[in-house]
Amino acid sequence: MTPISTQGASADAFALHPGYRRMFAHDQLTLGIFLPLRFYDGDIGVLHGQAQLVSEIDRLGFAAARVRDVPLYDPAFGDAGQVFDPFTYLAYLAAHTRRITLATGSAIFTLRHPIDLAKAATSLDCLSGGRLVLGIASGDRPVEFPAYGLAHEGRGERFAQSVDYFRQLLANHPAPIHSPLGQLDGAKLLPSAVTGRIPLLVTGSSRQSLQWLGEQADGWITYPDATHNILGPRRLAEKISAWRALIPGGGFRPHVTNEWIDLDEDPTFPRTPQQGGYVLRTGRNGLIDLLHEWREAGVNHAALGMQMARRPPLEIIQELAEEVLPMFPALAGPEPHAQAW
Image (cartoon, rainbow, N blue to C red; front, side, top):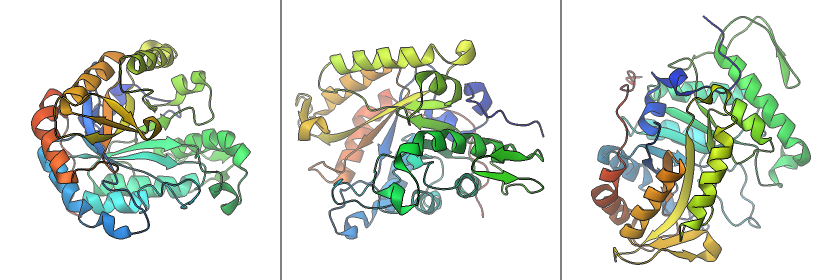
């Protein structure tokens, strides 16, 4: 087998990847749902029934479901994230879905060894028929690093080393790996990724330079800036353009952003920031306008969260599917591989 490059790849490298192709294409924007659907505030019961709703999201034709990775709950931080381990939970969701891309937003590449990350990722990719897209990050919760015996200030260097090691493991060839994170010779990783590699979309800077992001990231996930008027999307467009200018050869690589929404029953309710801008309250007309602005800015996928919304998740999902999704549909691409495990 030809060794897989340890650098970022253009869309051509993922032409046969079912998960990637469902989400990403040049000048297109698709919609996904950011889990959890309800905010955890001490009662895990808020997650009951979520998998059934994800099955409905899959049936309705959304491009992706995205889960977060928060190993330890820090009450001072105030947000427990998804609660479940992302790989375990996505494997559970894989059994409840058939086509939707399963994505992380984002797996913390500094806190686990790349062998463990790669083993979990390739297992999930196989179990789901090639539907895994990995958002990855260096971690933003300082309390977690000493718990793992790691230095918080060293997370940038460790992140870059983990990305390189991970990609060498997936290359699945006998060349030894020599890394500060370990030495590997005479063994290989099983199982292999369904299409040979798994997309790695880097979140924020992950303590790397923009040059590194241009060279190494298979895609880029950033916060959206302000979403209540056109100024935020314009600033986002400048950021995306600066990153894409550093992609070797100028090939297409996708950009992803997200927003927590409180979708109002009134379609004309204006885009209104809430909770210090963390949540956007809007009617669907304002949301559609924002999505068009993001697409013009160069965004290729928008993950919408509703954990802070007042309305029941199913109501919001149905309105999005009926009134918004037809303008930003999931993309045609390879069917997922056999999932009859």
